[in-house]
Length: 69
Image 1: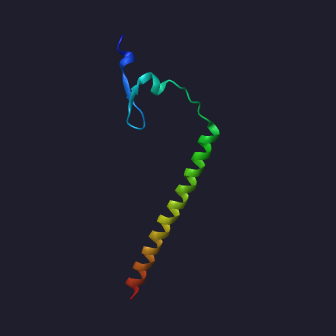
Image 2: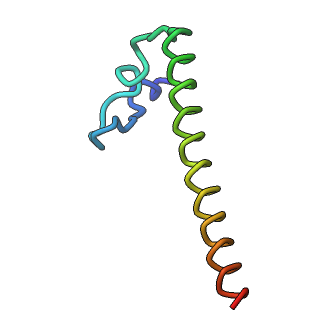
Image 3: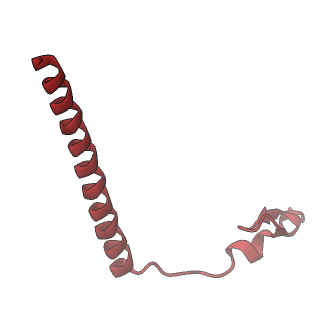
């Protein structure tokens, strides 16, 4: 039981530091930030889906034109 203070964790930089320092500070989640981030992700997903759909339509149109000759 005396070894818990010797437990190590790696921070984002890959440096080793004591576990208590890695999880010592409590950060509160801001719901507004999470909702804003989700809305931004939805917008990006919509753009990507539109690009994929446009690309698939263009390929279908080209194949249709080629097959019609």
